Length: 141
Image (tube, rainbow, N blue to C red; front, side, top):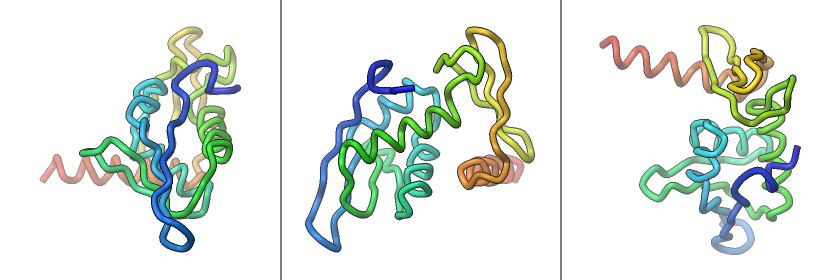
């Protein structure tokens, strides 16, 4: 599935040269809204797949990736994220809603109603579960 024809095109900006360079995804908030996912989780997925440090700055609504990456690299990673954690396994719709339980993530398609479970061993899934547990602990204190 090619996210480019269905949603916003990734806009990048490269800062610096050689060893201290960073790549910014300028419209990460727009992409996250379109996919109905948390931008911080999307940034972690980029970091896991590219093997680099990544973070999301809420104030600037941008994802920062350490290193220089091309539009094609980032589009491929976003399509991979979409295929694994957004797209319905049955009707291929991107209109899904994420549900997180104590040990796995599932998403339900709003078009056909199918529930798709994510691989619980994937680093992204483990990150999302840990972050939700951390939020719950903070709320209960």
